[in-house]
Length: 260
Image 1 (cartoon, rainbow, N blue to C red):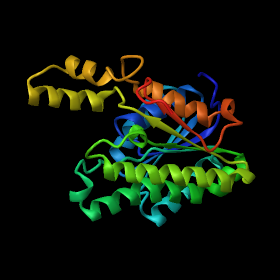
Image 2 (cartoon, rainbow, N blue to C red; image 1 turned 90 degrees about the horizontal axis):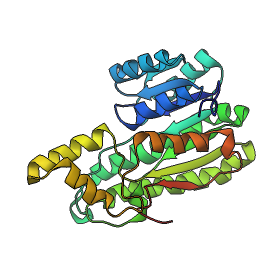
Image 3 (cartoon, one colour; image 1 turned 90 degrees about the vertical axis):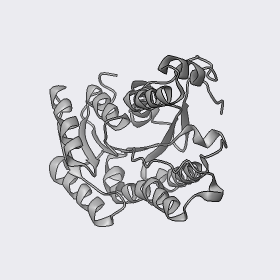
Image 4 (cartoon, one colour; image 1 turned 135 degrees about the horizontal axis):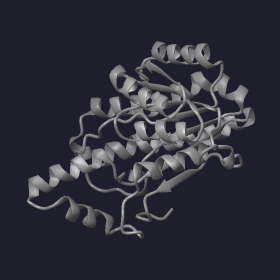
C-alpha cells in the first residue's frame, strides 16, 4: 500500500467522520496528496490535520456538490494548489428514507438522486479535462443495496442503481480519453458509524452489540463485516496503476454476503 498512489493528487468528496476520513488517511498512507471536499469545513480541517501528521498535503474546500458553481470552485482550487488531478473518489452519501416506496416522499427521492447521482456526475464532468491530462481514474462508492430488494431500501437502491448506470456509461464515454471509471459496492461497513447504530439497536431491543453483529455477519461467507480500511483498500486498488486495465466494473466488498 505504501506507494500505490505515490505523489498522486486525489480528490475525495463526502469527507466526514466515517468512510471519507478513512479513505483520506489510507490514500495519504499510499503516498497521495489530497483535496478534501464536503459541506462542513470543521470536519475537513480535522481530517486534514491527520493527513498532515502522515506527512502528506491536504487542501480543504467546503463544497456543495449539488451546486455547479461550488464544484467549479473546487476544481479551480485543485488546479491552483496542485496543477492537476489524478484520481476522483465520489464518496458523498445521503441517509436513505428507509420507508417503503409506496410511502416515500418524492422530494426526498429527488434530493437523494441529486446528491448521489447528479453530484457524482457533476464532479466527474468538471474534473474530466484534468483527468484526461493525467490519464486518471474515478472511483464511485456504491452500496450492496444493488444486490438485494429488501423492504425499505427502495429509494436508496433507486439512487445507487442510477449511479452504477452512470458509472458504466462514463466508462464507455471517457475510456478513449484514457480515464477509467469503476465502482466499489460495500456491504455493512464495520466502523464507528455502524458501531453506534448497533449500540442504539441493542439498547432499543434489549440485546448486545455483539449479538447484533453476529446476526448480521451470519449471512456472509467470512462470518464478519468488512472494515472501513478494507473498503478503502478496494477503492485505492481501483484508483491505482495496479488496476490500469480495469474500467466499467463494480467490485463488491461484503465478505461474501452476496455473490455477483
